[in-house]
Length: 322
Image: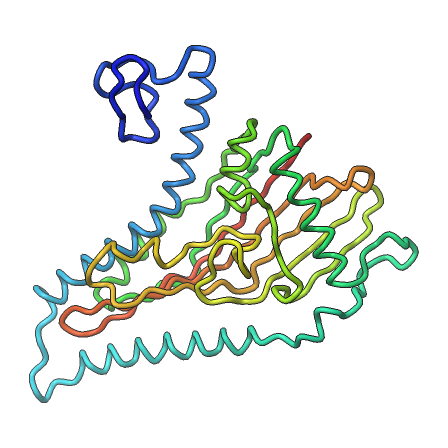
């Protein structure tokens, strides 16, 4: 942000006051609204940064412990090697099981929705109809909504796998960083809504394809439709494709470069689900609940190879008004 007073560039993207001349960076009528917007953005960015920070801290501590505390094994001592092999095998087996569970019969994409009301001819029966309706009307949030409130964000840590000496410290750090966000956050400008509502920073809410879908259903609830969509499990998704077509994802490049010791980093998103309500009169999305199960896996190379992973889940609940 260039200061309108001294014309110097402020590198802190969340700043509202110039670091050089201590004058406001924004005009009086916009200052308060901008401060709220920047505060919300900073809070959201901190959550994603916290995940990356935790991973980086675990890696650094792992290196210190391996180098200074854990003794190098004698030729006849295979304990350390056995532990590393066991950790690698456990992680590999977990990934294999998850992959097998994610296999989808392509015939499901055209299966009739048994939960839909057969009395209303307007209820979507097929996955194609549901996805087309969802994409078209969910995307209207970014262009038509006047306010989006994130009611809460629950963050659940399911499992942490780290080098044995770091397990307790890793669990403590993750628990601290990943505390639930229970305070409602309101976004009341077009820029804030685009920036913060799913998919953050994108012009769309969903660009899902039928081939992305694990299962979909539509229920007639009287005055509104309740649509549930679960996408197929995916490794290393990116924005705009697969899981990333409707959910916020952490891409490998966001972590790569944080440490030269990271030999490999990958993600797996399993059974990501959105449940949304659409007003039958206007076809507008009025609420949405996103469940995003996430697994982060990495390999560190320093005096041997060490595996770590964090298995967690995010639940984000929104109310939308027009």
